[in-house]
Structure formats: C-alpha cells, structure tokens
Length: 216
Image (tube, rainbow, N blue to C red; front, side):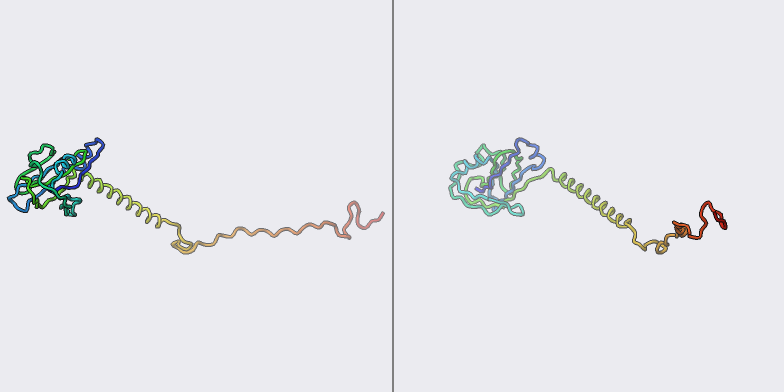
C-alpha cells in the first residue's frame, strides 16, 4: 500500500469555510502496468491505521512542487487481512484498471489517503498526484484586482497633488515678469523743527511797565 500523511481539518463546525475556500480534494493514480487494478480510498486516520496495522506500505510525507507525491518511507509488513474493496470504512473510494481518480469533499477530522493494488498484493508501482479545487479563487483574484486599482488611483492622486503644490509654491525675489519691484515712493518732506525760544530776555530789552527815554 501507499499512504499520504494525515490530513487534519478543523473548521470549528463552520463547514462553509470548506465549501467556499477548499472545495474538493482529488487524488489521481496510474499503475505502471496498465493491466494492474488499483484501489484508492479516503478514510479516517484511525480506521486506516487499523487496516494497515502489520501491512507493508510506504508513507509519503510531502507533495512535490508539481503536485506529484514524494518518495515514501518504507514500513515493513505483510499483506492486508482483507481486500480493500471489502472494507466499509472508506468515505470515498475508486477502483479499476487504468488511471483512477478519487474525488472527496473534505470535512472536519483526520484523514488518510490509501493506494493499494485491488487484489491486495505487494508491489504498488504508480504515478500518483494530488490537488484541491479552490471555489473562492475567482473572488480572491477579483478582490486583489480591486485593491490594486484603488491603490493605483490613490498613488496617482498623491503624485498629482505633489506636482501641483510644487508649481504653486512661493515665487523668488526677482521672479516677477517685469523685473524687480520699484522702490517705494518717498513721502512729503517734513519741515525742520523751529529753534527753541530764549528762556531770558536780553539785557538791553525794555522792561515791562517802563517807557524808553524817561526816568523816575
């Protein structure tokens, strides 16, 4: 058998998250020998572990960049006690010759994908790939495009405001179209101040109350 590391989903009961964002999981496998019948099943990890107890199988820990399954780690053991098609714990399954595609709608829990030969014999040699659909991808792309357009408009407005501010800045001291401004006009000349009046009359000035040329 060939298994993939456990898939754990916990949406806290919000199944709409799985329906809108995860979609369906698809596992595709093609046997190296076209005449070999394959079985692909999805089961809860606890049920798959009980079925594979003592069964020799390879465990894949990660997916390749192209969606292909990586090199599995070998776990020694024998053949399963029952044919995989006879077990009733699979939540999704497909069986037959040629390329087999398993499609499964995720739900909360721990899940394991198992690939076996349909007759339960050893020697699983397959080219297997896995993927997942994303129903919300068009909305995600649309949202990113809208956000990008808004940011572009805001950036253009900021650039336009910066250019306008630079053009309407204060002019330099000689930037008038007809040269420097003329000097301010002079006001009327002020009259010189009057000389101060003498504080004492001169000695030969007549005294008040007397007539010149007469004596008492």
